Image (cartoon, rainbow, N blue to C red; front, side, top):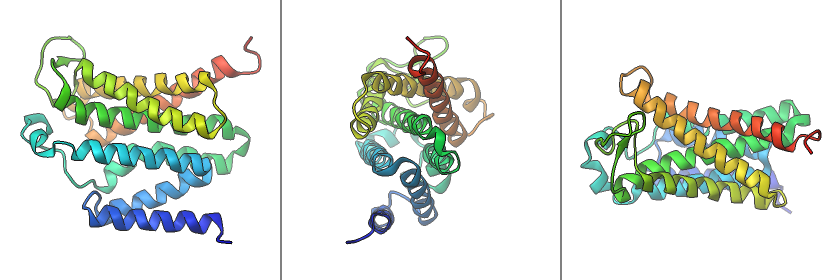
Length: 244
């Protein structure tokens, strides 16, 4: 029988080859993704790997969808079609950190795995709401003033984009819930945390990224971190043994 760890290593190797061959990731990005994937697997098991894979598939499909149309949008022109290592860390770094934390602090495994799921839910929400919101949004608004603004710019949102983002969070939440014995409370905690992380991304985009105070990668990392911390707080408040 093939050891499970070897199977996962082979899957990650296949992912490296596919990502580079299809020009989805640069070589350093693919290798970085494999390391992050290994940490997510070691801390989150097959469910963690399934969530990360789901995010990668959703994000890759959304980024590729109507790419030529999106590249004509002024605010989207700076986004690279092939992801680099910094972008991989920005989206999956928090998930990998929580995976490593599970190995160091196994007593908190349950909480850390929920945080992992929340970070990936936020990453999925941000990616899909940004990529598909530009295509299917009807009206675009500045997140702070709620005045009409140009689509594709940092801090600009649409109602359709938000709904797509919530749906993306729900997909990751469902993968987690199915892998851990369905708990509706955790399912909605993850959707809420992912959506809040997406909101943080838009707010930081409007306040800091437009002014050059934060890079897009930094904003994405803080988005996933905010979601993970929100999930931890909600889990403690709603699911702790002292809660009625």
